[in-house]
Image 1 (cartoon, rainbow, N blue to C red):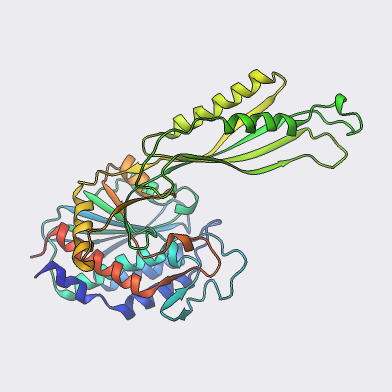
Image 2: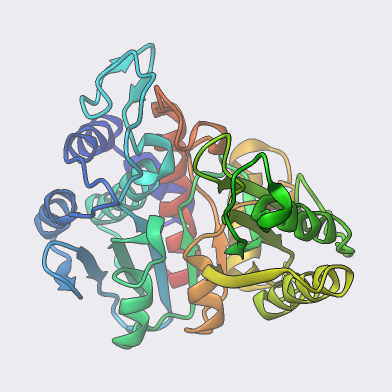
Length: 391
């Protein structure tokens, strides 16, 4: 069988119904609880004849691990996507968990980020099964929990249990762009301690907000060097994103706290970014030895970049070019993804490709074009045939 013909077996109504059923299982994280959505995915894959296992590090935090076995068992191609979603929030004009379809778009929390990607991967497996093609290698599909809060109960747990593959695609929202890198993340907080006093006698206190101002100035002086043209924002970025301090307008504040978001290029490391902040605090204290500050890392997510000559990249580029008539440009993603753990910890070359529009991620009235979900499924089916081989 010509692997290109696998795309013809993608069933648009089937992938639409699957995605709608997934959206109606809220799986909001925090607090977590992906079991309902996981069962929807698992039941679909079981019905296709795949070997399916449900894996939980913690009750209710369910991961689906499914394998479409090939005749030779090698190579192994992994399709990975997360089924947890951020809270719906305010501002919706439609039910965030209703799965409403209007003008070819399916609405709901997680449609773009990224249940549509998971649905496309499952639909690709369905197309392969319905075609009657026999793959030589194994297609492994993981629909995982906990990506939105660090992946410890999701992809990272599966890696700890021995997840292995020769290459992978994570179906994050890329709007059908091929992305071979993403930035890392460092989230941290700094707290300054002062001494309260009546605001009419400020000299009797120590103003923690004033001390924080000196630290923020030092943070702004950090040299953020580096440039990567894969990214829409090609340089590293540091932002102070929250600030709180004081208790009342006539009391000198005895405490101030900020939070920091630092986006890390693949040429950097979280450790380097952390030291830059620590050094900035040291410089601030050199200017004002009375500063009493505590620095704490909240979360670190490593960056990722894969060689554009990697087989999975070249296969995806080839398939997309054949379907569109244009050779796709390679990009990088600003946000962190599970590809970081697959590349760093499991040593699996990984590329990002999915139907969701990243500009709609985490927004009110999040939606996805069903035509793009179907197209992603066609691409996934053909890539699987190309990589794994068909008898």
